[in-house]
Image 1: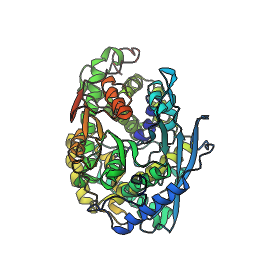
Image 2: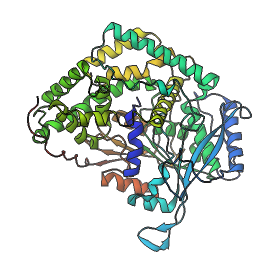
Image 3: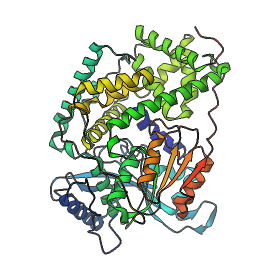
Length: 544
């Protein structure tokens, strides 16, 4: 699952914390890999990469649609890739790219020059997220050493932003009205959601046409190789987070000789059997555990929030809020669905815990304003709504195209009903998000068996939080097992989704040692959890 919280939080987290083969072999499109479409796609990738290397990227001033800030050091351009790699001379699409060139200046010693290490490409995940703002991170103090050594490169993957954007419905029709989020949906409600999923899938086909089938993770990996070539790099340095770890792993499997360094942060489980139906069920189960972590934290800070001294009492307060909002929406805008979406972010990032707890406390005491403010942020902005619709469309297209999904509603109903008995917080909302894949009009692919052998790939650094809900920890273990020579760094007893450049100094030491010097710890390394967030100012005791 890629919820809206992930897409929006990835950008804010970034700003607050944070490959042809070797020269002379530009037509090497990577090795033949079982499960990857045939020789035509391999030849097409080679052709596209050779063209991109010859043309390069003409960087110039950035559009404010690409970089919503004044940043003279960041320049933008485009790179052309085939819509269908089996037909490299056919339709082309342009991916937008942003870059801040390496400064070459040591931030600790202005007189010392830092050797350039090439381009560092970042992807924040999704599917459906853009990293166009990534080069701005070079201004963040802890990133200045990386900004001295690397060109910081962001881009909008195919379908995202201005990169041949996908759409499945008119953003102007997106409802801002309060919506339901039943924990135990009735048969009538299920039929409504089935109808909505079918309509959404039809809308994707109608608005995107025959090209819809080409928005896949395999093509995202191929696009990455064309981008590498366009940047003039023989080997790729790549940092991918969340879904970015999946097509990063595809890239490593398809183009191992094109990898220089690779960081996979908050990895998804690359097992073909998990892509993507089982992955979403696993995720819903993990969100229940992280939701309990949040409730335990709130209970420990009852003096601040007055929501009770046990997780069960906090849950009853949340249930009370949901029931009240079902009867009467807050400010005629926030119903149970908006409450659910607002608190889903607590499963991604614990730095959101204080604001969510304070909003729930205030609402139960009669003040809905903090909750309304959190739940409606950006809802009235046409640009934000269009971006959200585009992100949802890309997410749906890529996941539905990538793999087979159950097409019988009875399977979905059985699996999610069983799971909701033990993991009610997110199970059904996750099911509704992905249900269009049951009725998808485009052909499904067979997922690639991600796997590399000893010596095929430089050491890959894998970073994972042990209690990550959006990317359950079993995925990190599986990724570590499948990429020979990879190194796993675990933040124990923590659940932030994406930990590179974040709050944990131990994790960051290993991240920077690898990125700047190529040094890795042993095959496994552990870090103690970062400090939990502090509660907001006391809101008084008791609830109404």
